[in-house]
Structure formats: structure tokens, C-alpha cells
Length: 181
Image (tube, rainbow, N blue to C red; front, side):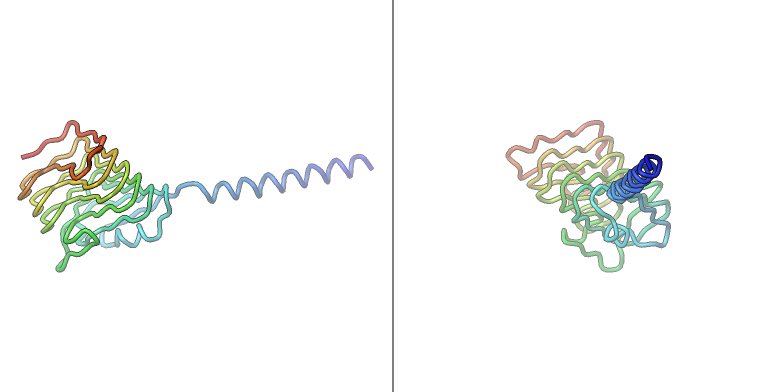
């Protein structure tokens, strides 16, 4: 009798541990991969906070808007160029960030009429190792944002400024190891 009770107890504990581990596994951040010809925006729409989206090489003709907190967008030899009629919540911009704790790295963003990469009213935006080339107003910019990090980016050919952190009394920004011209 003891053996049956012990085996039943062990079976119940194993079943519970499996349920708990499956529940926690589904809460883990996921990775998404965007291949040339696929939509970056579609991957962002499918992502959840904490997810990483890796965009593989080639030229992507689209504007991208990030409105979910905690998204990491990683380019691997990826170039973003404007579509025929570029629009985003931030105007005719390459990447528009309107969420907190977003990280963008490894992109070349070229020839957008407004901004290459821009964030409005966010906390802890990280722009690292991007290239913003020949964008209309600013290469990389944040407005009314705090905790911005712009590290090791290249910005050139912007009509206004290559890098801009402004309209924020307490920006607490880190701008380091960038190259502008």
C-alpha cells in the first residue's frame, strides 16, 4: 500500500513539475528571423515584449514602427531603404520607436526623407552599431526621452544633425564612440 501511495505521489509531483516548466517556458522571450523579402513589421507585430527579431542581410524597402516595450531588433548585414511612399507614426522615417526598453543594432538606414532611426517619449532606447546615411533631418534622434544610449553608430549626410538627443530636461543619455559627418 505504501508503495502505491509513494508512486502516485511521485507521479503527481512529476506531472506538476512538467506543467510548471511548460508554463514558464512559454513566458520566455522568443527569437524571430526575418529573411530578405520578408516583412520586418510583420515580425514586430508577432513579437512579444522581451523578444529579439533578427533581420538577415539584403535590402528591405519598408518603414518600421516599434510600439511594444522590450523589443530587440538586430540587423545582420541588413539595409533599410524607403518604400515608394514611406510613412510611420514618426513621419517618413526608417525606424520609429514609441516603446520603452527597445534596442536596435546592426542596421544601415539610408535615404529616408525624415529620420533614419527616431524615438519619441521613450525610456532606455539603445541604438548601437547602426549606420544612418543620407537621411533627411536626423540620422539617429530621440525626443522627450530618458536613458537613451547611442553607442558606436555612424551617421553621415543628414540635413540637420547626425545624432540628436533633445527636448528633454533630464535626458540622462549616453552618447559614445559614434562617428558623424
